[in-house]
Length: 372
Image (tube, rainbow, N blue to C red; front, side):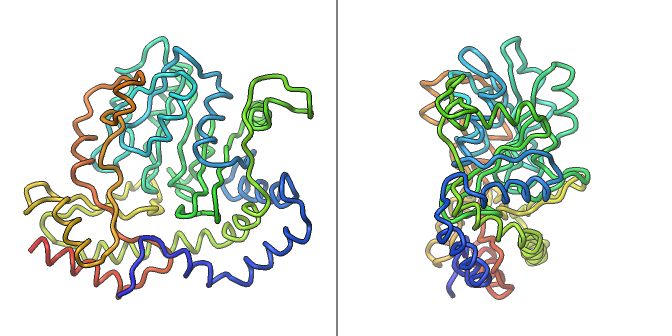
């Protein structure tokens, strides 16, 4: 059986005519940088997410860095986030000379545990960065309440959660700033690199726009040190087409997750993804936990799936506080018991918009054959 972690070809073929027409329009216009396609997509993206200002940038890592720069984060500052995520979340802070401070996760959601943040606050803390991991919204209200008491901004790392909701609100515009990645495998992905920053604050929007344009509002009138980070028009056109299908994509992912849940029901040794009743999980990944005392645990299952030619992935086998880079770059953390446990037990199965019930049955049968 032909299986993929992500079926970008199948997704493209389903919208080929729309996509080809959108790309042809940009190619014919020859307006590839800051062309009208970019502005149209930014406007539609902000509207879809029920927010005010969206700015396309070159990638999701740039989005995080630009957000931190706009908030004045720099050397000597501290940024509280999670160690159970991709390195970009903490890397952006380290690049600015700030210290990433890692708080533990909620073992059910894999997201930053609000109860673990306050003990890590110091006078040097300048921002809190929760991640909506695997498409599951973080528990934002207690984080925002804590941040408000300490006059701290909150940056939502929404790279994996576009379209998710928290208590009826779309993620990305709930905190001070939201960031997105449009890496091809994301729920809303382009055909190259791309990202965005989101905010309801007009002054912050204009500052981020200036930072992303070499620190300039007018050409050759550079006011601050910035970066060169922009979403090109071809990628914006691709994203605008896909944005119109995002609700359908989310529905397909959630239906696939429902099928996985039903197939795994009652199977000892496997914990299916938790769904917070306060949020809408968009299943960027379908990530199970495999008990360490079942045969050879998660790693044994991974080897079994590899032998059966079934795609799978482990996000993230080495939590950030244990990476070599953060043994040399300043970092600080508290008790990360749940983070370490998750890193040893998680395994992600194929999850995409073209996944069929027959493919899922084949995948689950392979998992069952290992566990039993």
